[in-house]
Length: 292
Image (cartoon, rainbow, N blue to C red; front, side, top):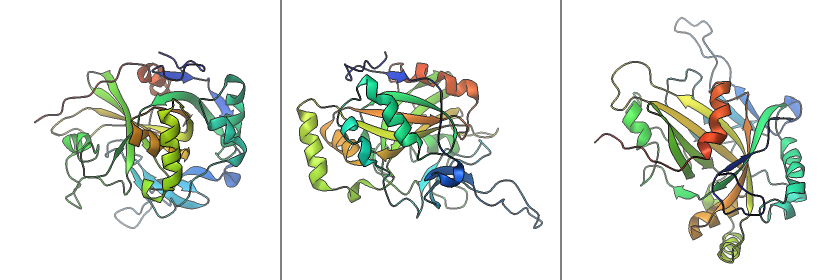
């Protein structure tokens, strides 16, 4: 079902149509980059280096490898030290955004991003805070069942940050969609008083809005004999605004509206996969049984 602007408690997603957003890459506060090309075995130049999300010129998150056969990944780096809230639209985000103001919010946050095509979506999310290595962790659960332990470390992939799980559903018999909300700074950095204020507001029925830039990475292990071979669709929302709201919602077991600006030029997914997202996101939630 689609979110009704006047009824934010309804389940689902409201796609707002593909839009051209952003500023020249050199002016964008947030952009996606490939670091310097990797060295080949004989010292020659190999393929692209790490795929990273850059904030204010510094690598903030390492993302899934370009090959598409390595495990899905978001991993916090030294450059993830600040949120990207915009004071000019805070009043608009206090609740579910009214119809006339959605474009204003999209344009305001679009000015932080590199020029390109984006699919804005209004999502209803019910976040659950996950600590890596603990109950509900995707990296030591679903991902480990498919790719196994990292060859070098002998450990599961590690995101170096707590994160929120919000939704998952079946794509088809051989693929499953997992959705994550990733804070730019860990919840322990949040102001306790502000979190408590939002918990109180949500208890009175307020459904505030958070904003994120999002990617879709479709990853599948290379041929071989993994324990549980299927395609992982990783829909990752990197939180720009709403860190206190997201933690409050997880604490109180309440929903928030998420304005997700899905980049169509930077994820590891085909255009047809990206086009399916609104329909998949509007499906009922379903989990996937892992092999024992």
